[in-house]
Length: 366
Image 1 (cartoon, rainbow, N blue to C red):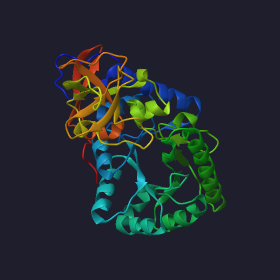
Image 2: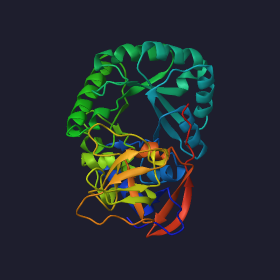
Image 3: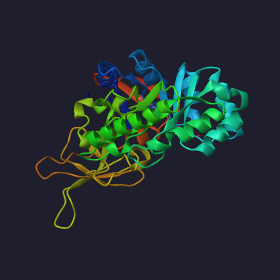
């Protein structure tokens, strides 16, 4: 990755175009080699320019988190969208979904009889225009039903007039050390059981959707037909610490400036303070993470504290402390959160600023 262009004022998010494109092409090739379709999660980047590159590289469509995100990407030409969460549909959500079906193929998630029935009531005659996938809990224990209950929910969706297309899961428990392989195996087992139950009940299952960035390239193809990784386009400090990417794969960093510098003493650590805090890096820190992010060019440094506009970085004893005014690149812990905190990002290539992309789906949380 190249340096920080002189035109950049800190803090600012930088996207390295060449690394981004390489990440997009690598994941597309890896899943294609397994016979899996790629449906990347656009909540990570929220930018039509990135989505266009993913689709051009072979993605079959996009995954989104909300109806609002679906509206943004449909406005920019996406024609196949999966809202991969269990929705509770009221009259306003139903009208928005009806409008979306005039521009794109729309699928939604559900994990309860009640939600499926509500969707059918609210969508009315348009219910048949919406595909529904039953969410399966494959071990993350957030939303989703156990595989044995897939038929119960699918039956309710079918009675409500929705088109039952298959099942999906989010193997989120893969976001922990030594867990990606186990999460991928549990994902495949749970989805396979759910598909078997649905087939036995007479459902034609055409979509079996799984995958996350930690598990996507570990995903087997015996049951699963498509994967939905998101973070892979940029990488972040979590993926770095999990060993699912290297620093060469990091396409997004936050440019920051050293605004305070302290050599430390017997009572205080050797440290610098950067002008990038939680309002641009996000505040996520899993219990296993070694800090609130990492420094791209200084792997031994650790971000030990964040305030709204500043990061405290404890510096290793065996390397020179950066000077005041020096500009550093910070890798956020959770890139999806960082992107959602800014209106646009700087796009760089070869150390040069080549453009800015608007975060078009920022704040579209409903």
